[in-house]
Length: 313
Image (cartoon, rainbow, N blue to C red):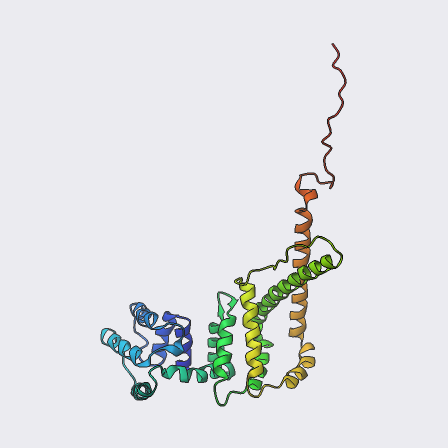
């Protein structure tokens, strides 16, 4: 699992954790001070990391790491030396045929499949680290994982869905359930507001009322819109994955609905949407023209001049 964990830390650019991975993989001894090694690793991989880990040139990285090994107390275990030498040779042969060939791009579908399907606690933790950052779910990472995993020959989407649901409903999945509820509330709230705005405009047109300029709640570059696009593409990837059976997925729904965790999530989503609707209504009432003039009774003040009695002399 050490190599897979290292790949995740490389994707996340977590070079402190990557330095610890070298200790796990026995490239460094446990008593090594990794403090000066961390910025050195960052210098190597930040220059090489462009769009993705899959696009790394393996030989280039190996050459740069070899230079580091003369500066710091690295040792290469014999079995890793054999693997590295073989990969460099294979990549060199392949590049002669296809100059754009990247050996890691061919290996990454296997990495993605293992992260999605392997129930080992180490890889469950790695998957969580990959998909979450500062408590926010990174839908683009899930999309890339599913797309790469679908290119693996023995990838089983049914197994992925079963394990994902089992993990989601377990105690270890509590953190993900909390974040998923927040994501659902954000997405459903946005969809409901856009739908209400569209219906209101259509009704106004039908009744001959003054047509309001159609507006969307968010711009196409907003986080909500980007999230919706990612979810749409994720669903398309799942549908197009060999072995996906929509009927089998539909049969799981009745069993899921009776799960206490799913019922709790449904209640939390409903409560969150209700609270947002009430808060929005209160803001609309308080910010309405009747209340913006400082008169709390909802009536316009009388601005007509008043008659006055003559001042007695």
